[in-house]
Length: 307
Image (cartoon, rainbow, N blue to C red):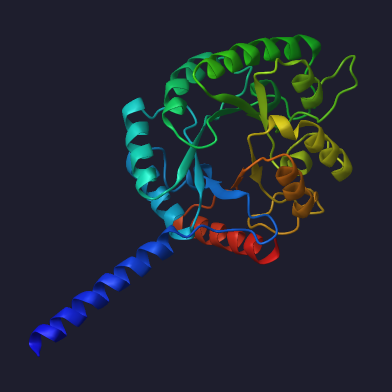
Protein backbone atom coordinates (compact mmCIF):
# COMPACT_ATOMS: atom_id res chain seq x y z
CA UNK A 1 0.00 0.00 0.00
CA UNK A 2 2.76 2.38 0.92
CA UNK A 3 4.58 1.68 -2.34
CA UNK A 4 1.48 2.48 -4.38
CA UNK A 5 0.98 5.74 -2.49
CA UNK A 6 4.60 6.71 -3.10
CA UNK A 7 4.26 5.79 -6.78
CA UNK A 8 1.13 7.95 -7.17
CA UNK A 9 2.84 10.85 -5.43
CA UNK A 10 5.87 10.58 -7.73
CA UNK A 11 3.63 10.46 -10.81
CA UNK A 12 1.69 13.51 -9.62
CA UNK A 13 4.90 15.45 -9.04
CA UNK A 14 6.16 14.48 -12.49
CA UNK A 15 2.91 15.59 -14.12
CA UNK A 16 2.96 18.86 -12.18
CA UNK A 17 6.53 19.48 -13.29
CA UNK A 18 5.72 18.79 -16.95
CA UNK A 19 2.60 20.96 -16.88
CA UNK A 20 4.50 23.75 -15.15
CA UNK A 21 7.34 23.53 -17.68
CA UNK A 22 4.93 23.59 -20.60
CA UNK A 23 3.13 26.59 -19.13
CA UNK A 24 6.42 28.42 -18.57
CA UNK A 25 7.36 27.89 -22.21
CA UNK A 26 4.06 29.23 -23.57
CA UNK A 27 4.53 32.49 -25.43
CA UNK A 28 2.20 35.45 -25.54
CA UNK A 29 0.39 35.60 -28.86
CA UNK A 30 -1.76 38.33 -30.34
CA UNK A 31 -5.02 36.86 -31.59
CA UNK A 32 -5.15 39.03 -34.71
CA UNK A 33 -1.39 39.04 -35.37
CA UNK A 34 -0.02 35.68 -34.21
CA UNK A 35 3.14 35.94 -36.33
CA UNK A 36 4.52 38.81 -34.26
CA UNK A 37 7.03 37.89 -31.56
CA UNK A 38 6.40 39.98 -28.47
CA UNK A 39 9.16 41.09 -26.13
CA UNK A 40 10.49 44.14 -24.32
CA UNK A 41 13.64 46.21 -24.03
CA UNK A 42 15.63 46.10 -20.82
CA UNK A 43 16.01 49.89 -20.91
CA UNK A 44 12.65 49.91 -19.08
CA UNK A 45 14.54 48.73 -15.98
CA UNK A 46 17.82 50.65 -16.20
CA UNK A 47 17.08 52.82 -13.14
CA UNK A 48 16.56 49.99 -10.65
CA UNK A 49 18.76 47.48 -12.49
CA UNK A 50 21.92 49.01 -14.01
CA UNK A 51 23.80 47.00 -16.62
CA UNK A 52 25.36 43.81 -15.25
CA UNK A 53 25.28 40.13 -16.12
CA UNK A 54 23.22 39.25 -13.05
CA UNK A 55 20.70 42.03 -13.65
CA UNK A 56 20.23 41.03 -17.28
CA UNK A 57 19.66 37.42 -16.18
CA UNK A 58 17.01 38.66 -13.75
CA UNK A 59 15.29 40.40 -16.66
CA UNK A 60 15.43 37.22 -18.73
CA UNK A 61 13.77 35.45 -15.81
CA UNK A 62 11.00 38.04 -15.96
CA UNK A 63 10.70 37.61 -19.72
CA UNK A 64 10.25 33.88 -19.25
CA UNK A 65 7.58 34.40 -16.60
CA UNK A 66 5.67 36.82 -18.83
CA UNK A 67 5.86 34.59 -21.90
CA UNK A 68 8.07 36.83 -24.01
CA UNK A 69 9.51 35.44 -27.24
CA UNK A 70 12.52 37.75 -27.16
CA UNK A 71 14.26 40.57 -25.31
CA UNK A 72 16.18 43.60 -26.54
CA UNK A 73 19.24 43.77 -24.27
CA UNK A 74 20.07 47.45 -23.83
CA UNK A 75 23.75 47.95 -23.09
CA UNK A 76 24.09 51.74 -23.53
CA UNK A 77 27.88 52.05 -23.68
CA UNK A 78 28.74 48.43 -24.56
CA UNK A 79 29.95 47.73 -21.03
CA UNK A 80 29.11 44.01 -21.19
CA UNK A 81 31.94 41.75 -22.31
CA UNK A 82 31.68 39.20 -25.11
CA UNK A 83 31.96 36.41 -22.54
CA UNK A 84 29.10 37.90 -20.51
CA UNK A 85 27.01 38.13 -23.68
CA UNK A 86 27.71 34.46 -24.41
CA UNK A 87 26.54 33.59 -20.90
CA UNK A 88 23.40 35.66 -21.41
CA UNK A 89 22.62 33.93 -24.70
CA UNK A 90 23.09 30.50 -23.15
CA UNK A 91 20.80 31.51 -20.28
CA UNK A 92 18.21 32.83 -22.73
CA UNK A 93 18.32 29.60 -24.74
CA UNK A 94 17.51 27.63 -21.62
CA UNK A 95 14.31 29.68 -21.44
CA UNK A 96 13.56 29.55 -25.18
CA UNK A 97 14.06 33.31 -25.50
CA UNK A 98 15.75 35.16 -28.37
CA UNK A 99 17.87 38.30 -27.91
CA UNK A 100 18.59 41.47 -29.87
CA UNK A 101 21.33 43.91 -28.86
CA UNK A 102 21.06 47.68 -28.47
CA UNK A 103 23.42 50.55 -27.70
CA UNK A 104 22.38 54.07 -26.66
CA UNK A 105 24.55 56.48 -28.62
CA UNK A 106 23.82 58.84 -31.50
CA UNK A 107 25.63 58.87 -34.82
CA UNK A 108 27.32 62.22 -34.22
CA UNK A 109 28.34 61.55 -30.64
CA UNK A 110 32.15 61.81 -30.22
CA UNK A 111 32.13 58.40 -28.49
CA UNK A 112 30.06 56.71 -31.21
CA UNK A 113 32.93 54.93 -32.97
CA UNK A 114 34.43 53.57 -29.76
CA UNK A 115 31.09 52.33 -28.41
CA UNK A 116 29.92 50.80 -31.70
CA UNK A 117 33.24 49.02 -32.24
CA UNK A 118 33.07 47.56 -28.74
CA UNK A 119 29.42 46.57 -29.12
CA UNK A 120 29.65 44.88 -32.52
CA UNK A 121 31.21 41.59 -31.31
CA UNK A 122 28.69 41.55 -28.46
CA UNK A 123 25.79 41.80 -30.90
CA UNK A 124 27.18 38.96 -33.00
CA UNK A 125 26.77 36.56 -30.05
CA UNK A 126 22.99 36.89 -29.85
CA UNK A 127 20.40 34.83 -31.71
CA UNK A 128 17.17 36.58 -32.63
CA UNK A 129 16.60 39.52 -34.98
CA UNK A 130 20.40 39.67 -35.49
CA UNK A 131 20.56 43.42 -35.00
CA UNK A 132 22.75 46.06 -33.43
CA UNK A 133 20.89 49.27 -32.65
CA UNK A 134 21.83 52.88 -31.89
CA UNK A 135 20.04 56.20 -31.99
CA UNK A 136 20.08 58.31 -35.14
CA UNK A 137 20.09 61.68 -33.33
CA UNK A 138 22.82 62.50 -30.83
CA UNK A 139 24.31 65.43 -28.90
CA UNK A 140 23.67 67.84 -31.77
CA UNK A 141 19.99 67.69 -30.69
CA UNK A 142 20.48 67.06 -26.97
CA UNK A 143 22.58 70.22 -26.61
CA UNK A 144 20.04 72.42 -28.42
CA UNK A 145 16.41 72.03 -27.23
CA UNK A 146 15.15 74.06 -30.20
CA UNK A 147 16.92 72.05 -32.88
CA UNK A 148 14.53 70.18 -35.20
CA UNK A 149 16.59 69.15 -38.22
CA UNK A 150 20.06 68.11 -39.29
CA UNK A 151 22.03 70.56 -41.37
CA UNK A 152 23.33 69.30 -44.70
CA UNK A 153 26.83 68.92 -43.22
CA UNK A 154 25.45 66.98 -40.24
CA UNK A 155 23.35 64.75 -42.46
CA UNK A 156 26.31 63.98 -44.70
CA UNK A 157 28.52 63.10 -41.74
CA UNK A 158 25.79 60.97 -40.10
CA UNK A 159 25.23 59.01 -43.31
CA UNK A 160 28.95 58.42 -43.78
CA UNK A 161 29.28 57.02 -40.26
CA UNK A 162 26.09 54.99 -40.57
CA UNK A 163 27.16 53.43 -43.87
CA UNK A 164 30.50 52.33 -42.42
CA UNK A 165 28.79 50.85 -39.38
CA UNK A 166 26.14 49.14 -41.52
CA UNK A 167 28.80 47.55 -43.73
CA UNK A 168 30.72 46.34 -40.69
CA UNK A 169 27.55 44.88 -39.19
CA UNK A 170 26.66 43.07 -42.40
CA UNK A 171 30.15 41.53 -42.54
CA UNK A 172 29.31 39.88 -39.22
CA UNK A 173 25.87 38.68 -40.28
CA UNK A 174 24.05 41.52 -38.53
CA UNK A 175 21.72 44.37 -39.44
CA UNK A 176 22.56 47.83 -38.16
CA UNK A 177 19.43 49.75 -37.15
CA UNK A 178 18.90 53.31 -35.92
CA UNK A 179 15.92 54.57 -33.95
CA UNK A 180 13.95 57.73 -34.67
CA UNK A 181 13.95 60.29 -31.86
CA UNK A 182 14.40 64.09 -31.80
CA UNK A 183 14.85 64.62 -35.53
CA UNK A 184 11.87 65.57 -37.71
CA UNK A 185 10.47 62.88 -39.96
CA UNK A 186 11.13 65.04 -43.01
CA UNK A 187 12.98 68.29 -43.67
CA UNK A 188 12.60 70.89 -46.40
CA UNK A 189 15.35 69.32 -48.51
CA UNK A 190 17.37 72.55 -48.57
CA UNK A 191 18.38 73.80 -45.13
CA UNK A 192 16.94 71.15 -42.82
CA UNK A 193 16.89 67.35 -43.07
CA UNK A 194 15.17 64.57 -41.17
CA UNK A 195 14.85 60.81 -40.91
CA UNK A 196 13.35 60.48 -44.39
CA UNK A 197 16.34 62.12 -46.04
CA UNK A 198 18.70 60.07 -43.89
CA UNK A 199 17.34 56.65 -44.84
CA UNK A 200 16.76 57.62 -48.46
CA UNK A 201 20.46 58.41 -48.87
CA UNK A 202 22.00 55.69 -46.69
CA UNK A 203 23.18 52.49 -48.34
CA UNK A 204 21.14 49.30 -48.56
CA UNK A 205 22.87 47.77 -45.51
CA UNK A 206 21.29 50.46 -43.30
CA UNK A 207 18.07 49.61 -41.44
CA UNK A 208 15.56 51.33 -39.17
CA UNK A 209 14.10 50.53 -35.76
CA UNK A 210 11.04 52.75 -35.55
CA UNK A 211 9.42 53.70 -32.26
CA UNK A 212 5.64 54.04 -32.50
CA UNK A 213 5.44 56.96 -30.03
CA UNK A 214 8.61 58.87 -30.90
CA UNK A 215 7.02 60.18 -34.08
CA UNK A 216 4.60 62.17 -31.92
CA UNK A 217 5.99 62.60 -28.40
CA UNK A 218 9.78 62.83 -28.90
CA UNK A 219 10.36 64.31 -32.36
CA UNK A 220 10.74 68.10 -32.21
CA UNK A 221 8.29 68.29 -35.12
CA UNK A 222 5.10 66.38 -34.29
CA UNK A 223 4.36 63.89 -37.05
CA UNK A 224 0.83 63.44 -38.35
CA UNK A 225 -0.45 59.86 -37.96
CA UNK A 226 -0.97 59.51 -41.71
CA UNK A 227 2.64 60.63 -42.31
CA UNK A 228 3.97 58.07 -39.83
CA UNK A 229 1.82 55.39 -41.47
CA UNK A 230 3.09 56.25 -44.95
CA UNK A 231 6.70 56.22 -43.73
CA UNK A 232 6.34 52.83 -42.05
CA UNK A 233 4.63 51.39 -45.12
CA UNK A 234 7.42 52.67 -47.36
CA UNK A 235 10.30 51.41 -45.20
CA UNK A 236 8.82 48.35 -43.47
CA UNK A 237 11.13 46.17 -45.52
CA UNK A 238 14.04 47.87 -43.78
CA UNK A 239 12.68 47.47 -40.23
CA UNK A 240 13.82 44.21 -38.60
CA UNK A 241 11.93 45.18 -35.43
CA UNK A 242 10.10 48.05 -33.75
CA UNK A 243 9.54 49.53 -30.31
CA UNK A 244 5.94 49.57 -29.14
CA UNK A 245 5.29 52.69 -27.10
CA UNK A 246 2.19 54.88 -26.77
CA UNK A 247 1.78 58.63 -27.20
CA UNK A 248 -1.32 60.44 -25.92
CA UNK A 249 -3.35 62.93 -27.95
CA UNK A 250 -1.37 65.61 -26.06
CA UNK A 251 1.84 64.14 -27.52
CA UNK A 252 3.10 62.75 -24.21
CA UNK A 253 4.64 59.31 -23.72
CA UNK A 254 2.33 57.13 -21.65
CA UNK A 255 3.75 55.03 -18.78
CA UNK A 256 1.57 52.04 -19.77
CA UNK A 257 0.43 51.04 -23.26
CA UNK A 258 -2.92 52.43 -24.37
CA UNK A 259 -4.29 53.86 -27.61
CA UNK A 260 -1.43 55.35 -29.63
CA UNK A 261 -1.71 58.30 -32.02
CA UNK A 262 -0.92 55.85 -34.83
CA UNK A 263 -3.21 53.00 -33.79
CA UNK A 264 -1.58 49.65 -33.15
CA UNK A 265 -3.90 47.84 -35.55
CA UNK A 266 -2.34 49.86 -38.34
CA UNK A 267 1.16 49.22 -37.00
CA UNK A 268 0.69 45.46 -36.60
CA UNK A 269 -0.97 45.19 -40.02
CA UNK A 270 2.04 46.85 -41.64
CA UNK A 271 4.43 44.55 -39.76
CA UNK A 272 2.49 41.42 -40.68
CA UNK A 273 2.15 42.38 -44.35
CA UNK A 274 5.92 42.93 -44.56
CA UNK A 275 6.88 39.89 -42.46
CA UNK A 276 8.43 41.97 -39.68
CA UNK A 277 8.33 39.53 -36.78
CA UNK A 278 9.85 41.31 -33.77
CA UNK A 279 8.20 43.96 -31.57
CA UNK A 280 9.49 45.11 -28.18
CA UNK A 281 7.63 47.18 -25.60
CA UNK A 282 9.54 50.25 -24.45
CA UNK A 283 8.26 52.25 -21.47
CA UNK A 284 9.34 55.10 -19.23
CA UNK A 285 11.57 54.15 -16.29
CA UNK A 286 10.09 54.21 -12.76
CA UNK A 287 12.52 54.04 -9.86
CA UNK A 288 11.68 50.54 -8.59
CA UNK A 289 11.78 47.12 -10.21
CA UNK A 290 8.26 46.40 -8.97
CA UNK A 291 6.82 49.51 -10.63
CA UNK A 292 8.63 48.76 -13.88
CA UNK A 293 7.44 45.15 -13.91
CA UNK A 294 3.87 46.16 -13.09
CA UNK A 295 3.74 48.68 -15.95
CA UNK A 296 5.18 46.10 -18.32
CA UNK A 297 2.68 43.42 -17.27
CA UNK A 298 -0.23 45.85 -17.73
CA UNK A 299 1.10 46.78 -21.17
CA UNK A 300 1.30 43.17 -22.32
CA UNK A 301 -2.21 42.58 -20.98
CA UNK A 302 -3.43 45.54 -23.02
CA UNK A 303 -1.92 44.16 -26.22
CA UNK A 304 -3.15 40.60 -25.72
CA UNK A 305 -6.67 41.79 -24.82
CA UNK A 306 -7.07 44.21 -27.71
CA UNK A 307 -5.07 42.75 -30.57
